[in-house]
Image (tube, rainbow, N blue to C red):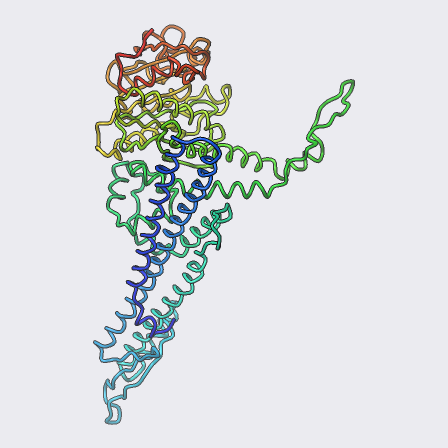
Length: 598
């Protein structure tokens, strides 16, 4: 990068190219949605057989190609804008230096040197002559600055010092531009896909690496953009997003997809786009990492004689493998099991009328987090948000996803044509052991603020701004979290359903922030969890035990159940949904008069 190049550099040309890539990415995104939602779901709804299965496999690969193109085009667009931003800053510095030089009667030459005119007090009857100086960059330390000023002040021609300052400013601007060029060139070259038509796990991990590279190079560009409000409310988050330009939205989605995906109050489609990128990249990363780990030895066990009796122990070979790889192998295996379940739900769109899925939250860290909606919550007339309980984590998310799929089918059939969205909300660290963890309330208290923000976010992002009918459903310890959310904040809901509740931390139904008569409870035959919970999660003691939603004194509507045990409340049967499930679906659809009560 030299002075002439910087002088003629046109940031607008790169910004125009960035707009082109952004438009291409948006078209790829629309094509992906068209394949995923309309074409693929239409085939699932109407066709069966080998031909349909083969077509679905091809369409899934095509949608993956479009999603990858969408992601990479957004990165290219952001990288070009970042490069233009850095170069424009350098060019502004150059133009300011040249303007100041002209105003002082100096001339910036094509090689970067600066000519200055004669000036100063006469010496031996002559005015000190003008000349030319070349800059080497401005002072870099207080000592250098002092020496620089001393030399300039000592010169008989005062224009010398001015020219030297201008020359250094020019040199600084050219160096800044050269540094930007050197920084961005490899990042832009890296944004190139393999020359095939298959998007592999390696391609997605490369995309993850590309994101990291562009993020590092574009720190100055990203810092110049409006940032999301720190600890902002859903309303604050929505205002921030609404105030961004299309260019700025693309930058945030491409460089900080996880951060955007977590922001309650943003449109569900935006959160889904962001979280799908995080999901696909992490899915690919984990599969590749798991494939690189040696499989556990087949001879895991052996027998030894310990005293009078033989004992079964791990082999030395297996113990050595476990020492090196065991923990990571187990974490990857569990996380991938959960991701497989989420992908399975994506692949079910259209089957028996099931609407598109929205990934409103995702993390594979720790026990994992996932928030999956059936249907777009932003356009739904009826929303149901389900909070699972003890032992819930990413690895076993499948059952909790399926419960809300079943709920969607029942509620949709009862909603008289109105739109329904049912959501599995695993947005907290659920207790993982029924004996060691579940007796403690801090899991609920820690997760309650996030749940309240999520519900407020649904209200904010809803297309109507308000007016949607929202039901909160808690199961087991999930009911405790729902109660804590009402106890420590305001539960943004119209109805609350508790199933198998060990207590909701509040004393009466009226404390759950919904209108009187809109708290519904189920306790199935053989479900022992409510009785266990009497010793810790109720909100008020009555006699020698805590009050729970199954108690008449609590004030909930007691719905009939025809299922057994702690986990059957969403059972479906050959002849149709269980009464336990149907009752919940009727509440979600607002058909209160049809709910069967005890």
